[in-house]
Image (cartoon, rainbow, N blue to C red; front, side, top):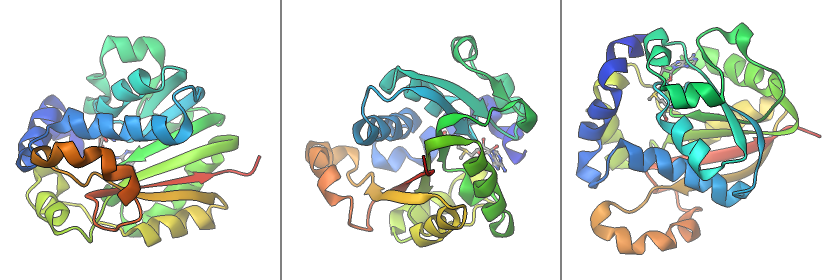
Length: 223
Ligand SMILES: C[S@@+](CC[C@H](N)C(=O)[O-])C[C@H]1O[C@@H](n2cnc3c(N)ncnc32)[C@H](O)[C@@H]1O
């Protein structure tokens, strides 16, 4: 709920924090949605949950890049949920009440949320999300890569990351494994700052290299 204080200017604060990359908060949100569209298929459809949706930045791009999805959102920050725009609310259910959520999601996305959850609570959160997946559903975790020094610098200077405890990809994978989800892929993402944008088409070939600013892990529930 610490995010209540940032709900009014979340995007502006994030824009300032990532400015050194030459990009803004929308770039990083759209990157994740485009990544999912690429690895799952732009035609991937069904119910999706943006867990820890904040003010809905990623949800907007999920709707744009995966138009077959119906995106719901959940966040513990009431103020963030209250700022979700009408267009998103007309297409999905956005709430701070876990009991309002379904248990038949084909895709659940957890983007830059886990590092705000206490380590001792993380397994339980992943377990509960696994239970909200339909058989064959996919849980996608995006996180900061703590091996990347630039990422660590950004987190250390981000006003809403004061509580952040970063988790390596192996830790996130272990939570998924213990929740009986099968890890399907683990990719490092976001390598090139804007001044190297011409090299970005190479990024999918660098997914094995633990130097990306962030990582993505997709895990599936047995059908
Ligand atoms: C850095 S923001 C990321 C927002 C969004 N996912 C994005 O990528 O733009 C982290 C969000 O996680 C939310 N959050 C933190 N702990 C949570 C929890 N236990 N359950 C749900 N949301 C949580 C915060 O309120 C905040 O909105």
